[in-house]
Image (cartoon, rainbow, N blue to C red; front, side, top):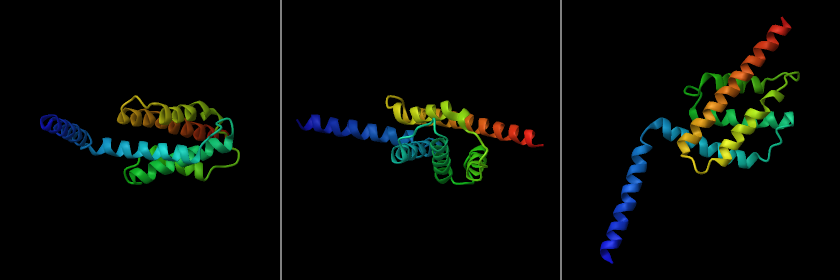
Amino acid sequence: MLTIIILLVATISLIVASQAFRWANEEEHKSLVVLIELQRLDILYGPYDFSKEEDRLAYLEVIFRCLIECFGSAKCPKDFIEVAQKIKSRSSEADYSFLRETLEEVHRIINHNKDQEPVETAKGIFVELHKLARRINEMEAGSQVLKD
């Protein structure tokens, strides 16, 4: 009986140590922190109806504010900061309806990838958010060309 307990404690210790070793990478740890925070905010501010402009903008604002707070403005990807500023100072004529599918995908990844490794889930979210930022920047650049 004592041998079983010792083996169980040793196994648990190995699991904890291997997990700590995996999280030694600061970027992975930061990704997990961001993922947890995004999941919390998604639940806190949900449910969202992405067919409504106000819900799309609220979701964008929550996500990018979270990223800037988690990374710090010095380490946060530049395109995230730019998009957050554009959303905050948006003109009433800006139309973000084209982002519906991307926002739904981010929302799905945040909430429904329970079987996937958390770091992989976070990477998937970052990929979608970079796409989202690029599309917003392209839209803004296009509307600027139309104004000129």
